[in-house]
Length: 478
Ligand code: FUL
Image 1 (spheres, protein in one colour):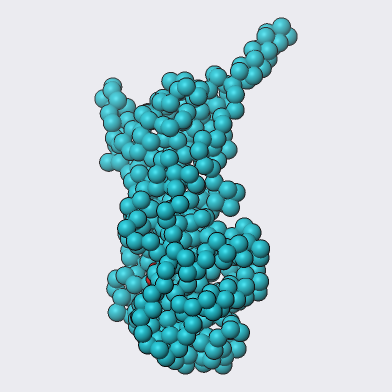
Image 2 (image 1 turned 90 degrees about the vertical axis):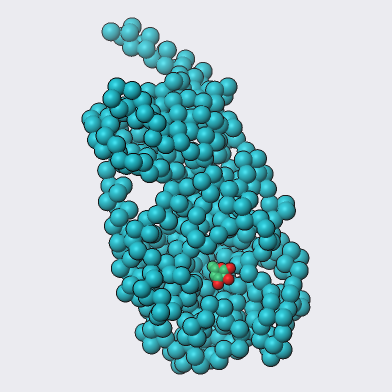
């Protein structure tokens, strides 16, 4: 008996020794980016003078007195978002109109001159406090374009913008994401000049200097802009990540507000030199701000679920905008939709038919347990199936152990080692043979494929193309 154990032990040690760790392929996410991927659903909150004027872009000449919400309750925003599974709230601290939701000492165009709490309110503080209370992260949107400021277009405005960033990054606790909007320059009030001002978008803001400044205050913040460097724009505002969606892209030729690069932003590129994943920003309503006439046009739970599939389900993170109404509350229509959406998500993905299912693979790395196919159904995000370096294709057969109706397949790459898969297909065992039910390109952090409901007891995933040996951490079947 002892002898057998010894032989067994020795052979597994030898096998283990044969399997080299997988080396990272290409750019990989930072710890902050990885945490951002894992959040999956975040929320935007657009609130300013536009809520009261009915506009989408304020001109900058709005009177502070019009900002007069009667029942503003950031705790309601944070509570609803936390309860419906959102992990971050990003607030428009200042939109293009220049009105500030905190009492900035650098301008009179702010909440301090509004009737809100008799000028004593600070919605940035109230919102960041509410986020802390409900356990979600807080993010900041500060529009680079400012249609109120007289100095917009001159170096003095850059100093103003940076002073405001200093206020936001030192007075309100940790900021998880900083959102730099690409919309820039054009007509505006500009302190009474009422003219068109265009800036050289690439150089005017000196982005490297601004980012360096913020990093001295909060080194871990994720920067969103068209070009990153933390996360990139997805190239549209309709909820669609690319069906092919690389987290990698070369940003040398990109910068916030550059036109004509939407397609590239949407798909990224397999040979990109930086890890800058796409973030899918979309509003629950047709507009970014609340307008009563759009109450009937709030996206339904089913529509939000589709958007989830074309954002999170394509390896991105969803940033869903929920704008407070004139009372300063999330509107009943929006809350109903959010709750329905989360319920739909919870019920659809409640039972993973592949949990602890038996899996076989055409091969696995060094024939070592560390990289065995069983790792894709153990629901442990840190274990994975991998092949030998020279093997860039392979098939995994998942035996469900019983026949069930399958509607969704979910796959995840272990992105800490880079994004690899460029082509794969899924088959089901039906009438004694394999039947293809889906084929797709990239996987990344997460890929969810919706298939025509089918009764089966076995699923086969075929990795058809990969830029380096595939490394798959999870496959779920629903
Ligand atoms: C755009 C802005 O112009 C919209 O008003 C909104 O803030 C959206 C998130 O970004 O570029």
